[in-house]
Image 1 (cartoon, rainbow, N blue to C red):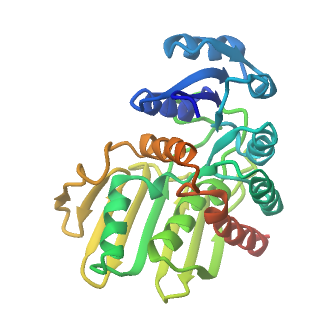
Image 2: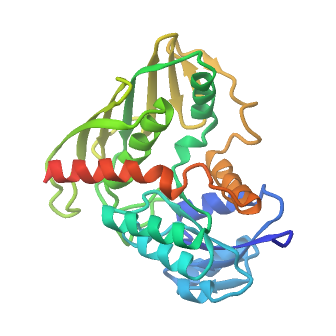
Length: 317
């Protein structure tokens, strides 16, 4: 591969901008095409980041011979079909979480990825946050084993808005989007597949058409358990908070920061080259392309998570 990896990024909203900020810190990578729903808003972002090509059509970017790889930060319902389009166009692809909201579509993506041999990964950022990496290193060193993970994913949402307070063109989902982070992370950190999963949900919102509250229980084959509470109704501290309860300690992970169970801050600044989980996720994607290897958070690695979500959806139905 030539020295510079040329990238098309689809989705110029809140998360697309996080990727653009991360990529600025990565040598040998250049975003050459930006895809968005509204041309004027997309061009505004492209101008800010000195991106030459702007379009509202992903296929236009896929037709550019110079594009080696694509990052998809588009609505959930488009993820599987757009990932397939990228692979079929011969482009490496990283798709933001979730890979799909229909399990059979995720299975099809894996089939095509295997057929093409291209690098394809999903943005399961928790695998890359320094806080969770620190815990993972401790587990791999045999110094810590998870007995229980207690996780809270809380937002306050009454209208269909994104992280920047802008109107969304699609509806977010507690199960397929937000629970996907924890379901995957639990199995990944335990190094053991999920063998039991139960869920209950609260009332369906009359206009958004989704459950605003959900509770999920998981158990891994090694016996570890996970309790996950999710809400769009929480009027308080927002975000996701992970409590790791283990045989040798308790740790609280809040995005890229980590604390002991007694709220003593743990220095995780030396865990990786950055404290930004999104940047670290992108670094893994580009490294896998250069090295011709399977990335952490590949389609094959995360697909079991989507099987669990599918089973939970059937339960809830």
